[in-house]
Image (cartoon, rainbow, N blue to C red; front, top):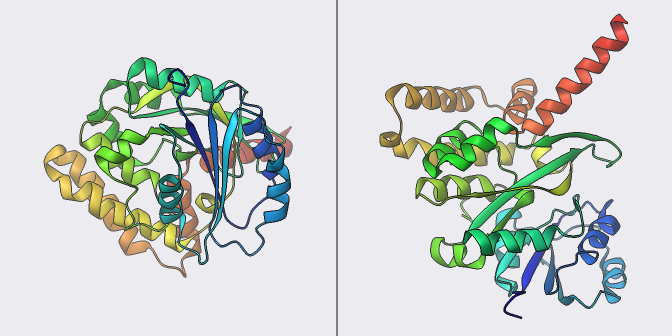
Length: 305
């Protein structure tokens, strides 16, 4: 199947399975002819193995292989993702969060065609952000300004990423060759697999291709939207390892601004300071910020009209 190289769809799970039926159905409805599905659970307390097994028993013929993994201990997102990739065999790796759903049945086909046409190692696309229960569409990201930066150059993308991560790991796909050339996700981090990888790759001149297509229905929720101290500590490590060590890339003004932000995080960060903690989560998650603005707008309209 030279025209249809094997694609590994990786679904990482941990203690949240409300959208699992819709998630699997969106995978099984894909029109691409050569799919492998890897489900890798990170030692959930409630992993519905029998339910998953039953759901995958009658897989369509284009899904050639299914691997269901369950870690014996919780190892974190980064190691779980690496373990799943190592267990896979596909030429291309397409993640799909257990909370999310492929937007249409031609998504996988479109991703493979784009990889082959542009000869890229990594691509990202649009995500339609929904409420956590998937009942209301909120907006589409990334915004036009960020898309313009993404298609300019790896260096411009790197500098923009240093401010915050605007590329969602949930709709970013990889060629296996990328991992062979640049290594796995960095296991110095527990929960952040995508952000440090994007910074490292773009700093080394790797172009992140942009597919102008909505890839997923993206559910707000999960670890990125919780006031999680481990996640914030990962962000601090990112500043130290992937940004501040590369002073020569920035102008003096740019570097001083990034350094000030880093020092503010380290100084003000405290588990007892819940207000600052939540603001920090807002800063790193544009979806959460836009949702908050929308709620404030609705409250204003109800209060004044």
